[in-house]
Image (tube, rainbow, N blue to C red):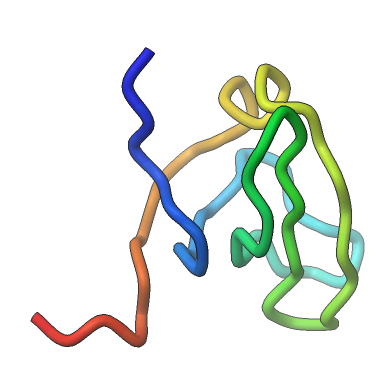
Length: 66
């Protein structure tokens, strides 16, 4: 399986967070993936299979210079 996302990438999930945002930052990769909400700062852990099912779009690292 090819990995398309990296640490500090911004991702958009299919279902929004209760605070109103659906943009997250990946802060840990492994069997579980840790995400941080861009709007409120809440951190969640989600297993990789569920993450890949719920992932809508990968924005990439916003701090990366191109």
